[in-house]
Length: 106
Image 1 (cartoon, rainbow, N blue to C red):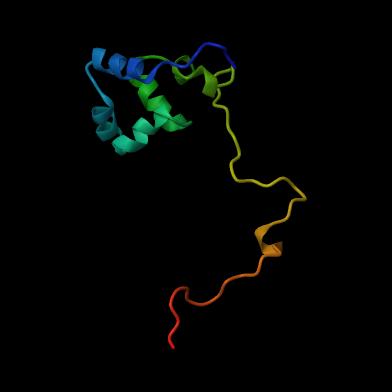
Image 2 (cartoon, rainbow, N blue to C red):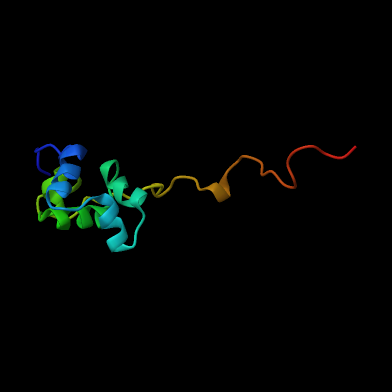
């Protein structure tokens, strides 16, 4: 992982503007929502990062070095996975709720 800081989001947007495009145009061109594309500013989204980087004429690892290995591959994190041997929800000791919740008829 490179120690170069990620580009500031304003620099990304101004770079797009200098090339005659913007996030809205890129989103429409690629058939995705503006919110999904703009999400690359806050979180890892390799597909969205690639779309933006291609429009800027650079590899995504240049814009977001903290999100990529030195070989240019995205850093992937497994989210929500429990380590082997940890209890699962099926084995939970908490009682399950059943039926409707809320007011009960009298």
